[in-house]
Length: 410
Ligand SMILES: *Cc1c(COP(=O)(O)O)cnc(C)c1O
Image (cartoon, rainbow, N blue to C red; front, side, top):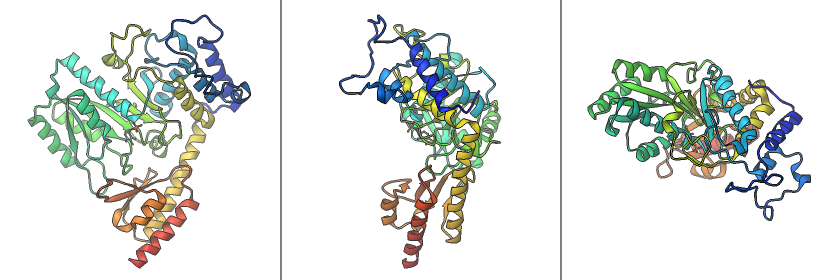
């Protein structure tokens, strides 16, 4: 599905899609509680917008409410919904190894929403299919999992059990996993919602889905696995193509990707993907004024977000994206070589662009100057560097020099 497209083709596709939406100016549309952006405030000057498909989409302001991979959805915005549908299929098939047309999904507000959406669906699945009580359903994830899992537990009134991680790899520890599953069962848990990390926020560490699956199978409990690829989805899928955190693995049922983390998309570009047959567990039948009802957590959302991700991926194409990740990997390798020379203690998953340095090696003045991010603002044990597009060797070099200087004076 995924092809590199010329800029002119990308432009034409987006403008055509916007034309296929119902038009507030040229048509007799008087029933929708929505319009284009206020022209007194937001310029709608053709000379600015003619070559700017994303800005035009923002100004036209299509609402992508609902999930468009299901049977029917709001017909007013059918043109741009088609781009979102294509994007979802591209991510599921070309990035996450699903067979064609076997996944549903939508562009969510972010990774937080996509993770909560997954856990909401599985909670309802266990409740509806197995008559499970809240107290028998639990979230199982790592101590380094993103705090959106704690939000989900709180909102959905289910418990959460966290697995300690291995000191060296920062991914789930097999012995700790066994113990936590036993503990959860003692606490009354019978249904497990697993969230496996494809790069954690702090360490870029990666969990072993098959380890989770094997332990839960041997514990004879029911479980569903969600992969949190908010950080890593657009990176690790390419830096480690042999990984098993995708739909080629029968245990993986849904995945979160965030285009606004590693893919340099505007905020509001989380992506939720799930095997067909599950979205319905989050359908709100009471959403009767929305055509096709609503199976998403968010409600109204901008169609421009889906368009922005589609434009980014179409501009690069699969080979261009591989090259982009390849360059970031090389730069991260270079940084780690220098840290090794200085005998600095740090963690890096070999397929990640996150380098997390032990705080004792970093002078506090460098933290502010170089905008390093701590694991914990009150008592930092680690600081991380994330090698993004703008984090060039020219910017890393002065940091290394100053770190070496401060280590000598220490
Ligand atoms: C950032 C992040 C999230 C949350 O994503 P938002 O887009 O900030 O809501 C979830 N999981 C991981 C691993 C993340 O890094």
